[in-house]
Image (cartoon, rainbow, N blue to C red; front, side, top):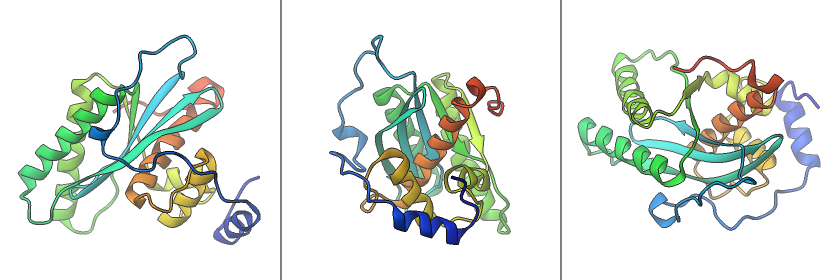
Length: 211
């Protein structure tokens, strides 16, 4: 079924049942055990989605095994409003480094840069993206980026979906409850799902180039 607008989305959601409960929602990486050593039955690929921002960066991990998608974990990296930009970037880089070393993803996905009228906002967002990309490059992870509109089209079927609508569809795709999960985290999961869908189409031949 192809959803083309908000009205169709709302009708579809009204006909579906709520997702099944899971044991974990958004938790701190420090509270999670390291990933086990992969085996022959291990997932084909683990994807880390990152919705980058200076004050609250969302992250989400999913495992992709053919057409089977499963949520691993998600959460946010928060900085206080009073913290200077330099400290925010240090904490952001440290948080991403901890996630990579804890969960061992094979690929990372970030949101593509978008137009900002405010020059300072664009500079701050660019600095945050740079800090994240640098850490991912340190670990030699391939990094893909997708425009916000493309992610929404992939998940919801139309490019002007709200964050709440994205969260609802993420819940349906991954069979999880998202009511207590931050929207930044569900946006990150949506990024990972968008990339995962590309992996399953023509064996990933349509994927964008890494950055």
